Amino acid sequence: MNIQTSPATDASVIPDTMKAVVCHGPRDYRLEELPVPKPGPGEVLVRVILAGVCASDGKCYDGAPKIWGSNDGQGRYIEPPITVGHEFVAQVVAFGEGAEGRDGLKIGDHVCSEQIVPCGDCLYCKEGLYWLCEPHDIYGFHQRTPGSWAEYMVFPKKALNYKLPEGMDPEHGVFVEPLGCAVHTVNRAEIRFNDVVVIAGCGSLGLGMVAAARMKSPKMLIALDLHPARLELARKCGADLTINPRDEDAVSKVKELTGGYGCDVYIEATGAPRAVTQGLDMIRKRGRFIEFSVFRELVTADWSIIGDTKELDIKGVHLSPHAYETAIRMIAEGRLPMDEIISHKLPLEEFEKGIQMVIDGSASLKVTLRP
Image 1 (cartoon, rainbow, N blue to C red):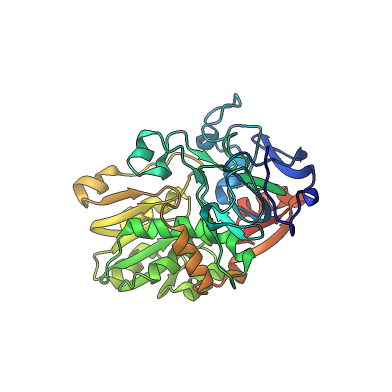
Image 2: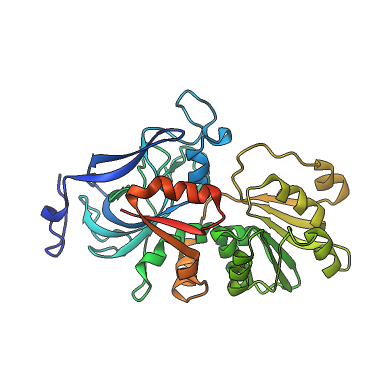
């Protein structure tokens, strides 16, 4: 196999083995020693700088039934054993045959890659909806695409890769994936200048949504969360008003601000069933309800509100299509307080601590692992 490197990054300095966190099942994640992958034709080998711990990682670890789907090892989303992790920033160290220069990359570049590697052949890919690809190979979930909780990983031939600009803190690149999801969410909302927009949930993703929604210049941008520190960050990201539902009735407050009608757009980013029913009550007739979250359990709501009562537009959001370039630009331009959003950088060996911090959620925002 012809692996292309530069004199500055000779193949001899790439070790034979690496540390990696491997999922074998719910609550069965293990730090293991694995061979460093070899890039095949068209592939790129990268050294992981930082890897993010997503809320979905915590739900996967905890065995959320809607994610695993069964207890027989054949998960709904996860194919164990698999190296986990779909949020990351990395540095190019080697190219497989024919890959040198792809996506404008060279040895030493700081890079990220969209979390889904589309097949290019299924119905959805052929319709241009690559993020809904039927095989749906996502880093860290499917065995064809091992993830980023490792010292090295490979970008497959069909991966969608992006070089980070000079002058951008490379560690901030770990936030490109979640911010890309936030950008896609806001795009789905089709925000207009006269809209009152409510974003429920000010975790790292919700904060990204606040920053992206601010760029759409709505009439009023309101952020909801149960944690005062997160609400303070939401104001830094561009929220006009913040509400803590523990302290006041958020539905009544929003209706008071809108002459009794309710908000035009409600974006749900908490993953809490109560936030869904709250949004259905808060939104005005013919409003736009945007659902992003992955829930641990089924959500029950009065569907009559959606149809007969309010004639709502309900839109789901999946992944981050056509959003990475915008996310990279937002970070490079300093539109978010990145050093406050990336709240923790733990060694890879402390992955279980990182997972538990994300599951608890009270003392962290974006938890990352450093291989």
